[in-house]
Length: 249
Image 1 (cartoon, rainbow, N blue to C red):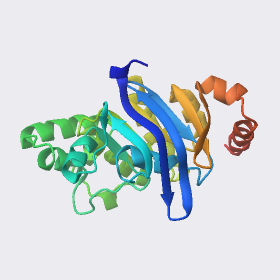
Image 2: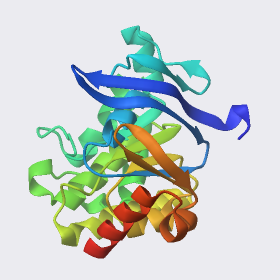
Image 3: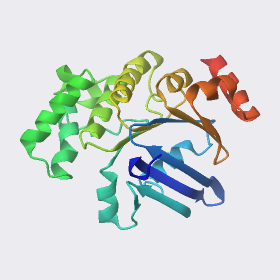
Image 4: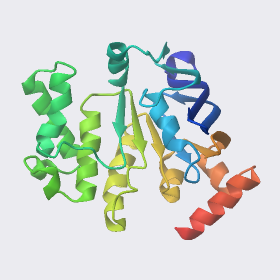
């Protein structure tokens, strides 16, 4: 990995919530254009690590760098750095009083200072990309969960981030709606979007990721190329986890 290609670097990151130690010295680098999947059992620290990348969780030890610059503790500077990191949450977090279209143009206009005309052009382009142009003027309550999540992805992309962080983007969806969201993520991967995906969709992680990290107990147990991880993992714990979840799928 060449230095200029690293978009996110976490070095020896520690995080605790009171007495509960959630991350125990995690080190990971994400290269531009890479799709990194983070897998592991509940409570392993996956989502917390993702939230540490953009300062949603403050770390107690170690460091996080975005495009070579340490994550700032100053709110204004941190807000600027966060613009480089699009975040897609489990539960959409769309503004209920705004239409799909308005949800997408809000941040580019008010945070980045993009002109309304340009923001609208981008919004229509992104609604096309996620297959929801016909839902532009519909409110979130009138959309299915899958449609809401696709709008949430479009909203994150509207800020033209360097990397997209996806925190279990399909976990709140009914099974029949999962595919439409995964299809959008797969398309972004094919287009070369840098993504970090925390997911329990193992078959999907195997198909789209360039690298897979298995976490448990706040540490990275093992990492490698998807085929290597899913067919010949070195750690007995990784193998046990994958056998169990692949059997459930």
